[in-house]
Image (cartoon, rainbow, N blue to C red; front, side, top):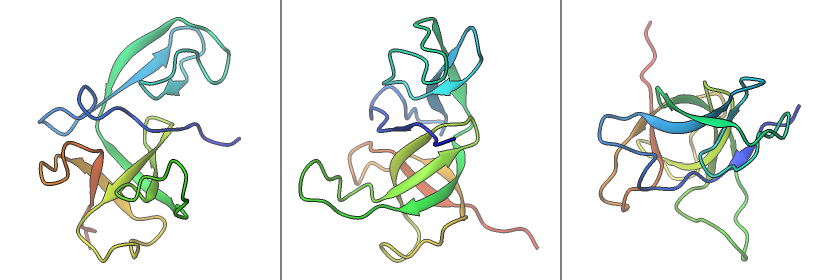
Length: 124
């Protein structure tokens, strides 16, 4: 199954405390980005707002395109809640964060409240 890819809006979904707002289907309990109007699994319009922890895994580095590109959000991050977002990952060289890296949502005023993640340090 291919995960839902969405670009979550910047203002309502990235509050100061590092949580992420998303929607959960009332009927099948699937997670969807806040921009979705219908459940991506069952098609229901009965979506309830929910808050996530803002943690996920880097799924891939996106190729830049000329049309509709987001050069400041080059990564696809799969969130623990079950959907994916395009986001920036700071704390490493640009474009060099490995696939599978665990990340945590962070607020970044430098880039103007975009979805921004920071790698989670590994516990040894």
